[in-house]
Image (cartoon, rainbow, N blue to C red):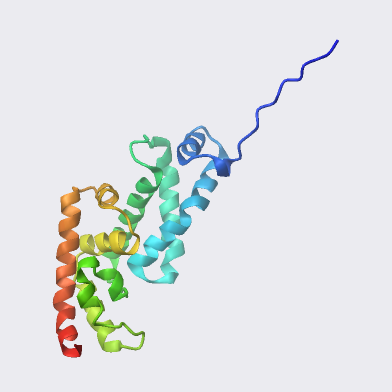
Length: 200
């Protein structure tokens, strides 16, 4: 008499599971699921924090704080947004807290600060690492921006998020995001345009 073998289900590794499945596993007490989420998203969170502060020494500490906060809040995650958008919101809020504590000097490339409509302006300036005068002007313009404008520029021009994602992260309307970006760029232009004319 022949016996029919029953095929055993193939276990899908944690690394191959979606964020949503991993979150459910975390909520059910699976110890390795959160580690996979961290490995999957930590580089983007580190890049976001670095883009805001431009200080390598702060990246590790703030990233760790973001994931600790995420782990503590994950049991209450309701799947109303994507995990990475939810995680970005935590990172932005942590960054805001840090920005309130101290004055931050950040250096951005001029090309990343101006949108596509500003190509004529940006093409007239080459931002060289040793160009202290231009660096000081760019830094002064950035330092004059309130946090909400700094963060909007970082999310859009540095991290490349959509208006919809930024609106969700910053908890405001899409129109507000566009308005903040427009105003921030206008403020930067006022600082940079005199130099552009001088060098033209």
